[in-house]
Image (cartoon, rainbow, N blue to C red; front, side):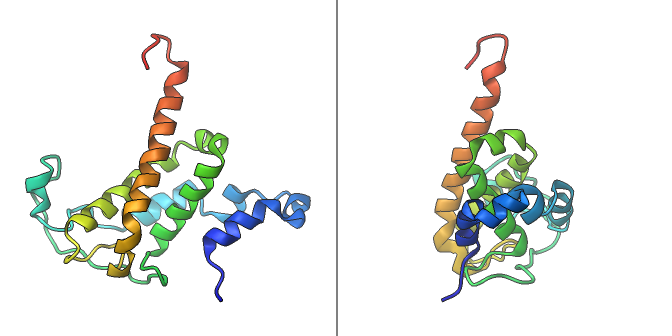
Length: 165
């Protein structure tokens, strides 16, 4: 049986060796925010299919070239970028304090959710982040992104001076 990344992430903080070595999950396991930004810049930002423009008027209509699927995907159909961001999402859902300290990741969560949502709407097209076998997991992924997004945005309003909430 193969060990999945989420199982490793679940066990890592509890390992006494990790505590002795003072391993930081964010700094020692994940790529930096700059590395993730660089990975994100490699993807096309055009919609998966021009027909999505009819559903969401905020999508630009100037799609220039067809999207390509992930260059390399895991057994679930996730690209390397999707795998990293999804693992980061799991860590932040378990450690909300760490999530609040790293708001830069919110951008990547939202991007992941947008690609997942678009791919669910038009699964016959190709997506740079997912293969077709990932379709079964995308609904749960989108739900987890919505959960952490609401938490981070509402949590950041706690310190608002005008009392708006």
